[in-house]
Image (cartoon, rainbow, N blue to C red; front, side, top):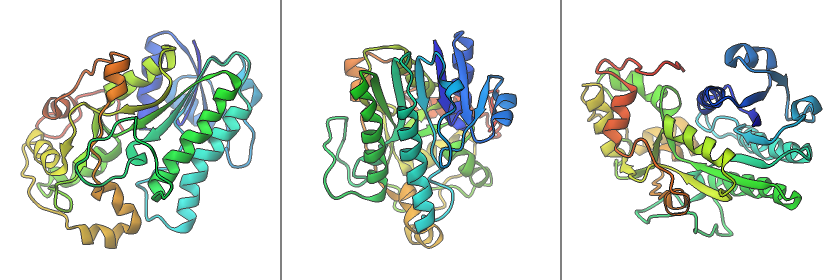
Length: 311
């Protein structure tokens, strides 16, 4: 298949490009710095500034699948008014322009989303049947509007899937930020530690994207999380145990709120999410359903990476 990927130099994107190359697919990338992306990933890449430019026509030639991973990192800095605009526009505007440029050869549009579309509180278990309410938090607004924008491709008769991703475990993302603290023995629960953490191993999220891109059965929203979410306190204990470090130093909620403002919600919200459609409709098989096993696959006892793609 001829597959075009945005956000390919990011955490998930790097692994996804490698997997698709191994499976003999033709991968092309759109990036702010196409030269750097091509050197990093070993695939053809085109320069694209979503804010000021249309999608390069040459990048779309004979494209059969678009995988849109583009989006400013939610966890980088406080959510100022300007930062919120960047976070929102990087997802909505880029998706809008990709759809406008969709060629006749396109068969599927696979777009990122996140578990942030769910309420983020309490112990209730949510799946894809959840109806988004009228009053939305910032996180819900981003995810809802991103999915609605992506769904516009369906009017062209093109299959669309929105991947509602949880916390991805691998050498990047959240673990990259937590690793130095935990290696010093200063890790522990955040807030009261009772909030639910919907996790997924990097190998499994890549497998989800590959399956969704190539299997025409997939359609609409799909929760990409392990079948076994854990509470943050359990996660901290498992991560500390994987590194043979103590993990009992709590980070009070008010400290996070002082440091991060509204962005503290990323660590303090509680998301108990089920991958119902993956398992019941599509028969997807997870490689990792046990958190300690997932962490043991990623790190040795010193915290050194076991896998060969560094952050």
